Image 1 (cartoon, rainbow, N blue to C red):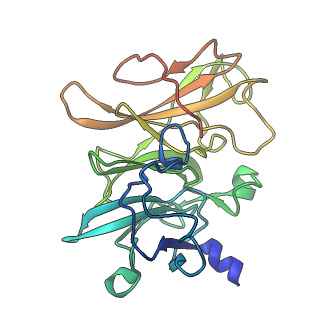
Image 2 (cartoon, rainbow, N blue to C red):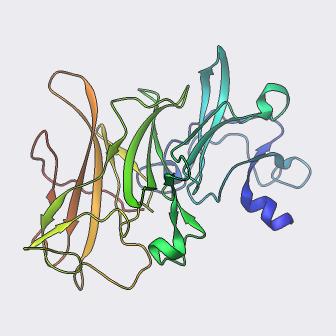
Length: 290
């Protein structure tokens, strides 16, 4: 029961002497994925011990957590400022919790959104749908979201099965309410030239069941970028190639932000990288894939 409790809950640990007010808005703290916090001024080998450092409280969630929780201090929610931890689960939920206390009003999430509506809209079953033994028992939100603090937006990709049809959608959530913004969500869908499993007439369509957004999202130059390799199944697009996707958030010439989603394929059969994007043709960017 202890191990089940740990995996089914989000545990918050902190130094009792105080919190370092440093945002953690992307996987491993920065776009280089170093995991460094170069502004740490409180934790030392002397005070990180069983007396002064450890778990403060636990909060229940509705599924396994594969994505890294994110943290933003001083977020105004419901008329009060909170230091907030954002948690995404494989049950297609995103939670905002107060990071300092689970007492009183903070016993419940500050907000919670779910992208499923059973029985018509569910997560993807790891075994019967995807044949994947890595993410069990369901596939919902696997990759770490990313937060743009300049706009107060959390970007996240969610897997769903809707009346037997599979989708992956890029969501843009207001970090103060969890509400959708920028006209989202948008479905990730595109077709590129290529051959291999699932190809037709020299074209390969993005497969929302077989490509999975496992790596963390990355925010760079106003674009939200992700790579979607195949799930742990036996088939592949082509030998030696790796299909990837890049959902993007772009700013249109009129200055109105809007979500768009595209697919980029790289590998031997791709003859370089191609990026599908309705508004403009862009040169491919180089970005870490974790």
